[in-house]
Image 1: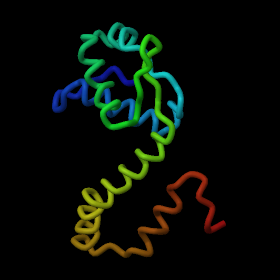
Image 2: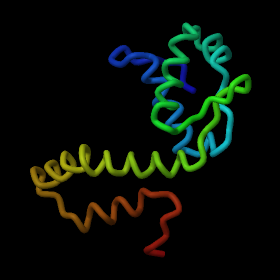
Image 3: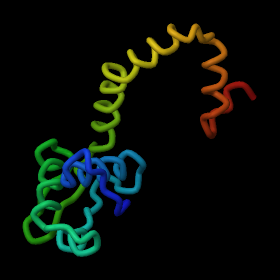
Image 4: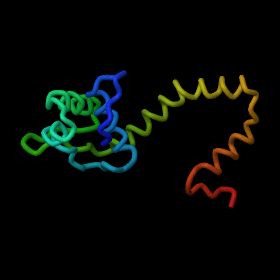
Length: 127
């Protein structure tokens, strides 16, 4: 996790978002243990209650489960759920802004698709 904190958002929320990113990127897989509250608090010099609040959001979202005396673990299917939710959020919130920009700048869609294909690692559809 990155130790730099943004002042525009509560730290517990940033911590939650970093764990989500780790799940999406495959750093944390189904069944993996999250770093302990105590370790995260010590490593980043945070109040343990701040770390716990960030982790609790993950529990409330059904992404993580608490196992008494053992810690917190990524739930089965958490990455799949996150991908579905993040894709929908992108389509609902970010994509309309992108479409407006494309229209405003009168960009060519075919050219944009080709640029996107070239920039995606491992996408060899044109090879």
